[in-house]
Length: 73
Image (cartoon, rainbow, N blue to C red; front, side, top):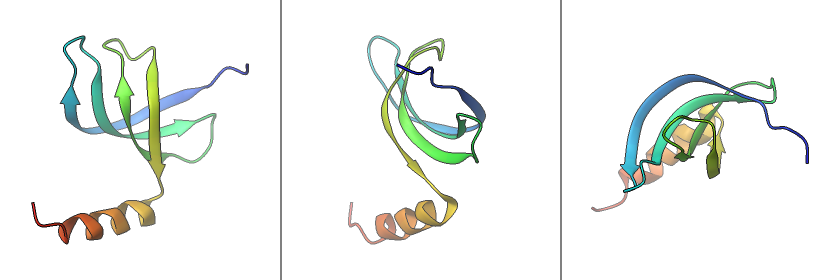
C-alpha cells in the first residue's frame, strides 16, 4: 500500500475526544501534496495515525454550514 502523506495546515477545533485520547477534529489538511481541504476525522494523541474521515472543499464546507443552520437542535 502506498504511503499517505499529509500536512496539517490549521486546526479549527476539537469536536469530541475518546477515553483513549483520540480526537475528532476539524482541520485544514493537504493530502499527498495536493490542495488543502477541510477535514473531519479522528486523530491519535500524537497525530501519527488517523481514522477514516470526510474532506470538503471551501464551497462544500459552506454548503454544510448552511445545512446545519437549518437543523433544529
